[in-house]
Image (cartoon, rainbow, N blue to C red):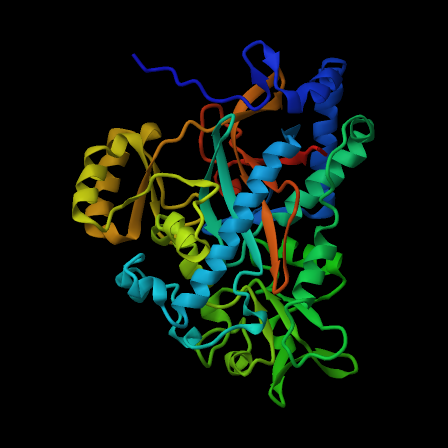
Length: 474
């Protein structure tokens, strides 16, 4: 007989409604479910009209899809958010310090806190960044921290997205949609705003401009182009910030600076918010076949004449094997214990650990070290015997490519179904903006929800949806 697991409900506690949801529940109780269902259809039409879609790589039809949006918000109290934001800020500071260290003095490696081979053999580590400090000393200007919850006061960081975190456009559009459809809710319930994010993002990027920049810095968003799965977001953010959206062929090196083509000739730019992967940034330094980047941009960067956000080589900090050392990394650079917990992580590269993982595969979640989007992972409790056996062969063949974690009892938040409210598992991706003088964390973030009953996979590419995230004013 399968043991029933009691998951923490963020909305209810026994027969009572938890404090953050009480005003919302009072409003919801007076609503017609049919009206709410019509509103859900209106939201889908709005998203499709606006063009809020994504592509799924590897699909033969290359169909653009909508990420399903659920009308029931995920609500956090001001006190809950205070703890989360303090923990995120601590983590972001430590990750930036770690990146500066491993590309310069490597003191954490000399101290034996992080194994040297985890850096030396890491595909995301870029020797081209050695002995160089980006303008303002910032490596991760935009960070998305994936957080899950298992209890009233139990929050865990699932992973750090330090390369090019995505999803902020959905956070903003989800809020805009809720404001349009339920304005009366926001007059009854005081929710902290997220609409300042584009303004704060531009301010943060401008604050990270090279020291030689005079006047207001020129900022652009660099996109791989319309066929990229996140192109909508690239275009959206450029538009919201009031800056140019450019592709690699729009840029060139002129007199030791990067300039973009305009109708009046070439204009020098100071900050590039790039949504192009490291390997494609500069064909003279990385992949010579790349048509997406700018030849010579790394020379300009190392000369201190352009800011690239996030810095090349930041991926080594969100490697899932490095993730297991983040509590030690925080303590090494800050002298503090981590405010937010890590999920217990088993490094399959270690022989004894690999044996444990293979022996307990049916109870674990196994992920690729550099994986994302829910691909290449195994959710042991949901896998059949053949899937477990096939994955065990993969593990034995390349153990260093995987880490394993226990299956967490993720919290639930209700979604709207034809039968009313029903619990589904969620995670949260808050976004932090880092400049030389400040860290700004948007109050909320992107809540992703597993729409299939019992599923723990929230990724949009795997059928998950999104919710508006409310942080209540204190």
